[in-house]
Length: 228
Image (cartoon, rainbow, N blue to C red; front, side, top):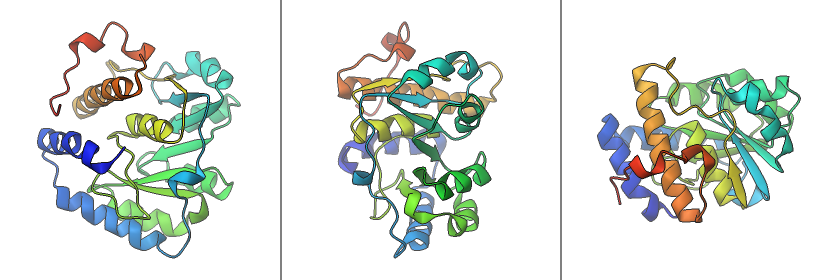
């Protein structure tokens, strides 16, 4: 996705959550400084073809784990990687803003698993603390603001929907969504708002791909995309 295509959605998100674009850009620039000259991954280094399971960390993950096991590739959103590893399912890429389990992200990068590390306005200190300790050769740096290589923007907002946009950018033929619970009553209000935006972005992505995600069956007709 070109940034020009993503920008209207990003601006709508900033308005909805009162985010400061300059803060996101500071996060992007902090990540950029930390990986510069250390040869991080670039988008062309990742190949996620065939059926790709984009795994969330919702309560449904244990019962959905076989869907992930049968997929051609598995992309884990943040702590979904823990449940997958416990079930013996390999993870081909981790997508994280280092909010959930930084030690897990460091360990996976050290083992050579690609880790898409995302910088935004609220995690600058975490980026500065953890990225210098990571095997940067396995890190794909990302931002939701305007990209500045080697920090890229494939689209997406939460770790989960950003994982779907990354899989799309890396050649996925079909996307599945084990471990996603768009109406989890246990989440706090702010997380519920973010899930609502993740749903909007996934609906946009399925329209762009000319694909219908089963996750949105019975829901898509009520999903509004205010930036279009």
